[in-house]
Image (cartoon, rainbow, N blue to C red; front, side, top):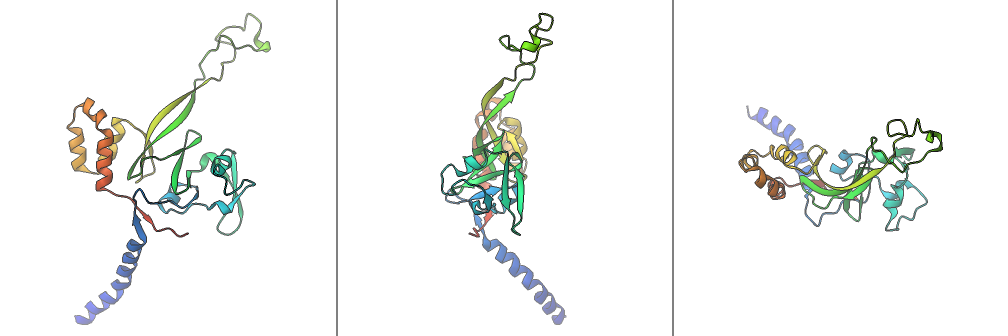
Length: 232
């Protein structure tokens, strides 16, 4: 019997040591935490704090320019070297975001926005441009439609006019989902903590709107974020 116990301990010990080593290599997120600078191709690379370093981006832009990432992401495509030194083309619209000076920026609405409040539930503000295809511009002129028969709001081409709005969003760091900053989203996110969820659900609707950020902060305090220690 003792030999069997000894055998199990010998087998399990390396596994336990590996788990303990992995836990030691992960660090608690605090306001002093800095993400590694570079492009994050997807949300998984964010969780691993493993971006594509700026040195592997093929560009003529100055790496030390403060506007480096703004200029790189202003293009439709970005060429990078992968881990094997092979060139790859990435569509900018598919990139999750980037880190500059240790701060995380997320790609939303074809632009990159700083995540100002980090945690298991993040909060950020984004400028989003929306277009209304049914908008009719009475001052629009096209010589091909100058004939009075066509010159009406139903047959002439619609003006491609966009409106820019400042919106608030939430980022779920468990799934990578981006959600509107509203009561419904907060209710969904709080479901991972039954105690907080029940307390929030007990509030009146008006109070729920007022207390959204308070409950997000409380959730983050109870469920902190951890990231791998920096490799660079």
